[in-house]
Amino acid sequence: MTFINGAVVFVLLAALDLSAGAVAYAQPKAPEGEPGSVTIVVKDLEHRRGKVRCALFDRKDAWLTPKAIAGVEVKISKGLQAVCTFPKVKAGTYAVAIMHDENGDGELERNFLGIPSEGTTTSRNAPANFGPPSYDDAKFRYGGQKPMRLVARMRY
Image (tube, rainbow, N blue to C red; front, side):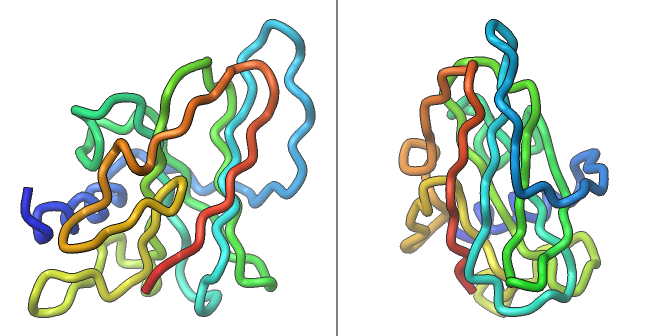
């Protein structure tokens, strides 16, 4: 996969059926036996313009395609953070792709080389050196019972 193809995936995040979500800072403990929630706190945003879009993937072959199992769109807080929460997540292995849609057009802006000019990151801050970040670098294991909180740092 070329970097340009990988960059296109963040445009696909915008095409997901994303509903505007409220920014939640505290997550209650999930009842015993019920799936919990996965929350990604996105830090290092440059400004509050636009929104942050997060997409949750559960398979390597679906990574960075329109086959995300869930999508969230959130506002940016005054502290230049965004919080994406995926409720009722079952136990399993997941990865999250994140973009800062700075101008709110639903598309990832790119320069003439196809490199994103709007912020992107992933769960576990997977590197995007000479191409898109890999699922293996972004994946994390979730137990499914207790709420999980991860931190991702936006890169521009």
